Image (cartoon, rainbow, N blue to C red; front, side, top):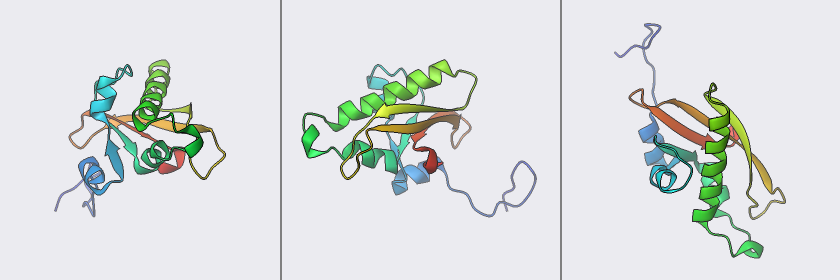
Length: 129
């Protein structure tokens, strides 16, 4: 049986790769590298954030998913750059969605170890963590 840092038996584990495969996380690494956001490590958003990005109100039909994702990535990168000494930072982004009047959303950017201990970024709403 596998054990952890405290030398206790491991009961269960759920890897980042499994979360991406299950749809709990959406891998946006390619888009993060292609935008001006500057992320050079794997980046994923929670399924709740992805749902908000996709939920474009009819009144904002000029918006698209790529542009909204770019806004989220840019704001996350900017917040992380300012808070260099923190592994987690809150930021705000304009993201109106269908079924809500809320336009400005608070999000969280976490920088931490991935499945193999490598640096990864996860972006979600505060309640997603």
